[in-house]
Length: 83
Image 1 (cartoon, rainbow, N blue to C red):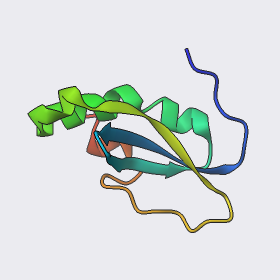
Image 2: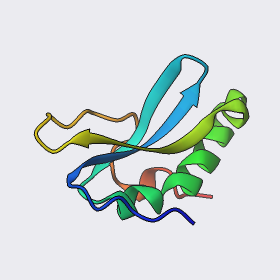
Image 3: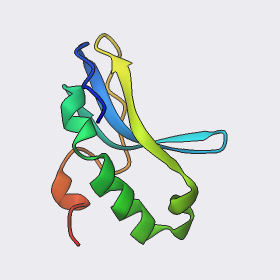
């Protein structure tokens, strides 16, 4: 299990498909919050787009000084937690 990054920042669940990176969910102020959503966001993405099974899912951090970036799903887990 990955240990959360203690650095302050804007944390996201991301997907990488070849040369393309997608900010799927977030931002959250703590890395642990993003880590906790990776599997649920991946399952949601795989239901929405069969190509998602070939993508690499993980997390990314933008510096705290940077403007938060809008993600595709936002930061409300109810959007992707419906089974």
